[in-house]
Image (cartoon, rainbow over the protein chains, first blue to last red):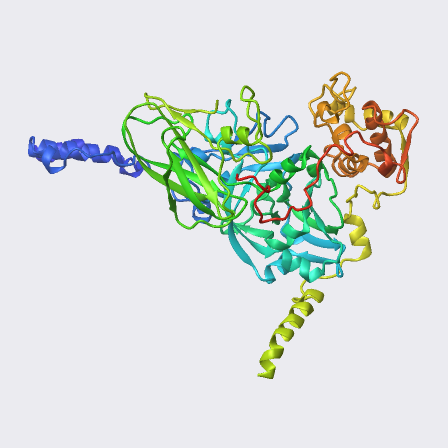
Length: 427
Length: 188
């Protein structure tokens, strides 16, 4: 009889790789044999075994991909479709709500383009970078030549000037998704400019891409010589096409439009050139112009954040990102009562200059409605303001919507309702 | 000891030498022709503008024949692409009220010329002749009431066009430097 049973319960098709079915049948068999002792011998598994295997392929062996259960994706930003009616990529936001650590995976890094752009399909062997204008020695480089020069590798965020939260946004992807952080590798722009020899009145550069629209931005020479990078590497491999393959300018801590992609030309000039990129980001007063260049100290809680759901009262690690165009983040604070009391958060890992910095805060939620906020301080001593503080500084009438001048670095409030749902609390 | 006293001087000379001559000798010198072929930048003062000229009437024809109207609308508005005609906001002298529209918001007419030259028409960028770019620039400035109908634009007259926003935008303040707090007296 035992042999009969074994024969009858034998899994028909082990080759299918249906491991769970096999185990269930195996457990039933064991139960049959030991008559009720199965519960203690094999036990109730706390979680099912995976049902399927990922078949090895040459492609997956060569270049891996994430689990099919990971569905975190970018979305078009700001109500404009991307790609749009012409097939142009415009603005695409990163899913910060699912982010961990500080590196944005290259596939999820936010995208912004001049005008809307097709992503050029560049053969790196054909690509050149030319430096000319007010220099002693105009120079032209192949990618191979650039890679021979002394390199640097740095963590830096890039953030779009359009990364502005408002009360209509629901998720942190909508309020803050136009910032991302990667490990960038390349040559310091100052290395190349010194090699070319900048002439006395060369106070600005114009950097230009090779895409159809030839997107170009003007950058002050003081910044160009300080810490700008000509990047060919991103997160351990070549810069992705959507990020400027094979060469991208990176202007750390400044509005993202300056970090010109598909870079092919840098012209040293004596004045602000008022390119299409520049004209689109003009300001009416010099205070706002000053606040528009460099991004101030900024942070946001990514968990729990808008549209997420807490299952119930208990322990949660509040987690978020902090960054500043003014240098390294030196302090992050969290409030669980809408900004009345502030407590120090822990900075996870090293706070790099002009880089996303992960912070966390140990929290026991009592199940009552509350409002979470975070704020950070940078190495310049500047501190992230609430929208009310901004309104007060500029003497804005309290009955009008708060106007945040320059780059928006205002505090993002999240309201936790008593049912555990999380909502944007900008009023 | 005397050598040590001279050391800072040597170091200074070293820095000076490094700033004046190439350190690595990597890369090559582009030819004049290569620079000309790639250098499409146009400054607000217009030094790089090519010879040529255009009129409003020619621009109106080109606006239709080059496909501009197909995306931007027959009258400069109503298409899928960004509008090129200022908004009707009644009597105002504030150019910012008209919206972020290139031929009215830009402080310099050179920027209008530059963008048409580098970025238009979609899918055929860089194919317009200098005369065509002068003409389309003239037409767009005309429909936005920046220049009169009989104005002829060329490399001399274009930079002199008085754009409504010439003096109502703010450059970076003189004290501005990277790495400083963003605004004096602003704690945020």
